[in-house]
Image 1 (cartoon, helix red, strand yellow):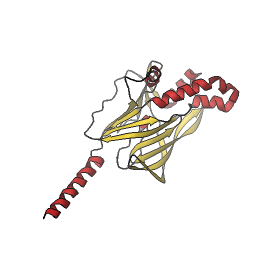
Image 2 (cartoon, one colour):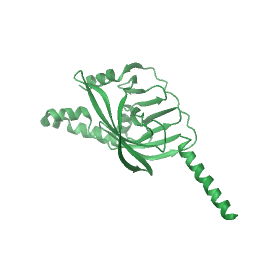
Image 3 (cartoon, rainbow, N blue to C red):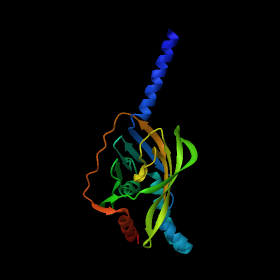
Image 4 (cartoon, rainbow, N blue to C red):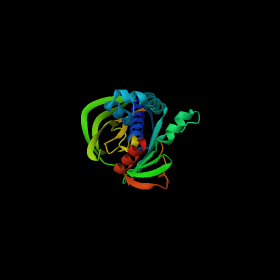
Length: 236
């Protein structure tokens, strides 16, 4: 009788634990960024090593600041919010870097990014990603993750091109969210490589339902193509 009670209790505990992970589908993920040199500086380097030498110190400085920034993805059944973590003890350079990172809000209907650059707010309709799911798997923080390769349409010299994204997602959290507004995969993204961003989850917390509010920002509504063009112009 005691053995039967023990096994029954263990079974209920396992079911409760599984439901808490799979059914609650609410929590918080923290990421670090193993950033590389940004695309603007890489393009200079591709054209001329000599010209790049003039900007190399700035490129490395920007990369190192990004490596210090931590990010969080809060999510529930209805929406997600990805943003840098504001830490009061962060140095001045990191705080300035955080101001340029932006906030990415996504719900089950829209695919919108809210971002603040150069003291100007934008509401950007993100472009869809064409994903291909591979057979590669690996473990991240105890979660079995599957590799997916995606391509996002962009423009270069007024010609349409495709930019590659590599993501590792887990089916253990069955929500289609991830960093930088990416998602639309059969699980949440724990690792994302896109441009100079190399984001890797450092902690996952699954718990009670988290309330997430859409950012209230007075902003210009533009497409991702338009936003990219604005940023390129300002970098010059």
